[in-house]
Image: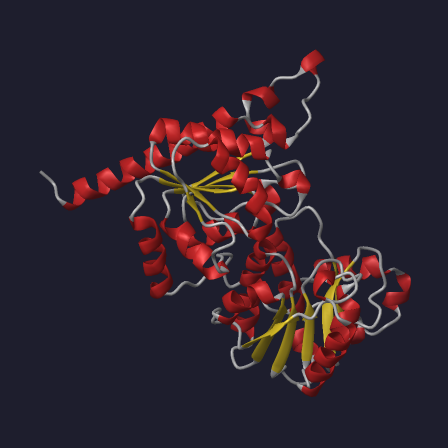
Length: 392
C-alpha cells in the first residue's frame, strides 16, 4: 500500500496517533510484514448470515495465498460450519457460541467462557475480526488471546487494543469491504469469485428429488431476515400462480422452518401440486437444489449468493435497504437483478419528483417477465450449443 493510503489511515486516528512510531501505529498497513515472525496459526471471526459469509470467501482466499503454510481457523455460526469446512482455504471451523451483540440467540455465558478458554489454549499468533465495525466483535476477538489482533473499527474511533485497525468502509460492495481489510494487512486479492462446494452425492440426490416433477422447475425463496428486503408474500403467491399458468412445470418452495406459514399461503393459491421443500434441506442440499432447478426467484438473501457462487439461474429482488452495487454478483452470469427503480412504475413520478424506492414497486408482471427472459435465453444458449456440436 502506498504512503498516500497510509496517511489516509493515520488521519482517521488524529494527531495522537502520529506520536507513535510508524511500525507500532495500528493504522499503519502491512501488519503481516511488521510481525516479528509470520503467523503460523490464525483465527478469523465471521459469525454472519449466509450471504455475508460467502462474500468473505475471497478475503479468506487472499489470506491463504499470502500465508500458504499457516493454519487458518474460522469462527462462524453453526449453520455455516459444513460449508466453511469444505473451503480449501480453511483448516478448521469453530462453532461460534454467541456473544452480547453478536448472534445473541446462540449465547450462553458458560458456553462462551468455555469456548474462549479453549481458543486461548490454541495459542493463536493472529486473530482477525471480519465482522462489521467491531463494536461488539472486537472485544470477542481480543478475548481469543492471540499475540496480535486486527480488525475493522468505526470511522473516527480509537483502535483500542488492536494491533492493526482499519476504519470500516461503508457503501462499498461487501466483497470489496472484507478484501480491503486483507489488503490493509498485507494480503492482496487472489480473485473475487465466490465458492460454495458441493459433492456429487448431493447433486445426484437433488436430481432425484426433482426427477418425478415436470419441468421447468421454478424455485421460490420468499424469506429474508431484513423486513425491508422482503417482497410481499402475496406477490410471491401471485407470481407462483402466474408462472405455472404461463409455463406449466413445477413450483419448488424453499426456505427454513420459519418460512413454513408463508409458504403454506403460496400452496393455497396454486391450482396445481408443487414440491414443498421448506425446512427439509440442509444448507448444502439447498445449494444442490439451486444448482439443479431451472430458475430461482428470491429476495436479496443467502440463497441469491449461493446462486451467484454456483452460477445458477436466479432472479433477485432488491429492496431499498440493499442494492446490486453493494450486494449483487461481481461476475457476469445467468442473473437478473430487479430493483425498485428498474420498473416502469418507479421510473415515473408525480410532480416531477423521484418516486420512493420501495420493494413493493416491483410488480408481479416485472418479475414474471424476468423469469421468462432468463429461461428463454437459457433455451437459446442450449439450442446454439447443440447446433454447434452437431452441425448440419
